[in-house]
Length: 353
Ligand SMILES: *Cc1c(COP(=O)(O)O)cnc(C)c1O
Image (cartoon, rainbow, N blue to C red; front, side):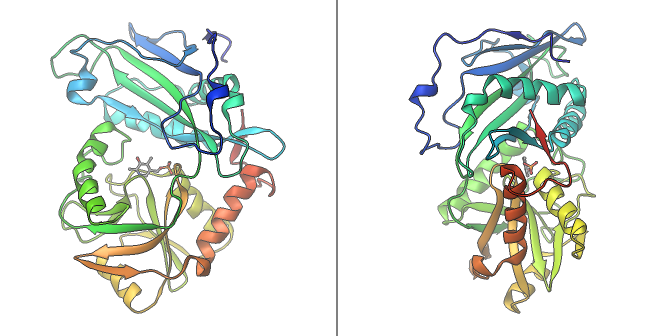
């Protein structure tokens, strides 16, 4: 299905310059990138070319109106050298849901996965060998029409770039419950993985950093009463032995592949799970009464990120020590295990490239 990809290889690989023991997130890019244009109402021939700058018109609608979406996924090397992607069909589906919300042309889901596999095969030497590291893949799509008017573009560029990356958060995170700023409103673009959501989050996130927090926990835009998600992660809590996560029924939460996997696994293991609204009040009461047993962020970049501390209205609540977290520890061990090949992948989540 990918026989049509044109490949132009770099004459000078950067592989020799990489310090594999020090891989800061998003700074080092692999040798090649995938590019596929959309024009005349059709996807054109995809190309894999040397990574480098692209040129575009200053009036490009992406720069002015933000008609652009992205995905984030990882290629992982198992202990025996096999390289896999984690549930890539879910990223393909979400990519197309984002396309739909932003009036952009979709890509056939199987084709999307095949294009990613083709780039990873080309970059296989860039997939780190150490267990905590991976080759982070960033597919994205943006408008390219030469027109300053506000309307959906008729031409687009789809690209995939890749960067080798180590662990995202070195230690458990400290998060602040945000009750003023809003990430997403009902009817807005919160469910789409689109640039504008992130642009709007920069200031509130910076303010939280200034107060010493790593990230925010967003609350609903209407009442600021219910917790939604964190910066680049969905949230999972364990209260009184029940696994809780905000439901995705409203269109204000980005549907995380990792969070979906946590819920799927919990159900597979027969553990009690509730996807429902969770109020700030309920969370704080559970912390105060010592009924909160676990809390973590779920997202591709960090995978499972234990939350050490939650801030609310100037108060800081310390959460139970990470060593006592049975759910996040078990989930992380399972996910790491199927990716490295140490545990049988009974649910078929790791797709070989
Ligand atoms: C990408 C993203 C996540 C995490 O989704 P995964 O599929 O698990 O990586 C969560 N929230 C937001 C806002 C995101 O953009």
